[in-house]
Length: 379
Image 1 (cartoon, rainbow, N blue to C red):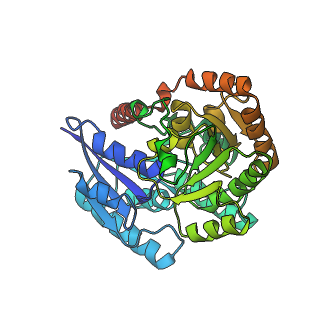
Image 2: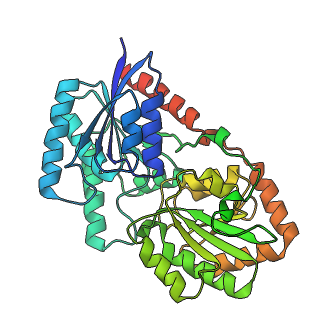
């Protein structure tokens, strides 16, 4: 008899947690698992999910923002779905769905409740009482959680620090990418769409949405310093969001539009990496930044802020660079050193290409989740 599994996520946006969840639901062994999905509606990946054969429920009341009425209605609807479907396991993702989904699962009598932390709903940039409230809620629902999955050791240590977990009921399962889809070979075709050619230029990019978490303001600060000191550099910020026009206007106001491009959403990010020499990440917090793994697999030299999960992939000054958050001047300094000293750049790139990334393969991720489900259902 198949094990029935329900995955619950707040919204299928264009992000690592969402892509991983959708891939897992689509690729769990159909001989062993009967799987369905519950998600808030309106995500960029909704259409992709609708094309898949698994059962799915899209709820208009499951929203990211705190909304007492919507949250209550989402809880009731998820409870009803779970009572009707009777899954053996529910596996929740993201902060809002993680809280509401676990409560609904507990109330409906689901045997096994699992939650993956792809990062936390709280961070050091929030107001004190807001952060304390989110930590309190996470502690509360931890009592009804059978097993926790962390995508990085940094996230695990954070959970221990705030006593969100108190037992050894956790696993480390990386946020995976399809490693075979990424190659270190470069073609620089992506930049030609924007009227540029390689011709000795150094291409520096990031792949991130335009949210405070990803900190596009510091990306601009880094680019401004480098562009003012070097002539042969072109920066690409590849990602969209509501503030796309806002950031494009800032670029124009600073007179950087000939060297700094905000592209908007890019459907196939592999073409970005094939045109990238140096990849930078200015995130203030993360779970495990898949883009760093993608960039390394694509033969890019990575310079990243010290957000959660980065040190699981980057060994500082060996296969990339880790900079303290907000130290955009230091990031710019490292980038300029890499550009000016070719031997230095080549050494770091060679080490990056040799980095062992098997744990970050998305099919390996699915396999580890299958093994966990089978193990937990027998307890």
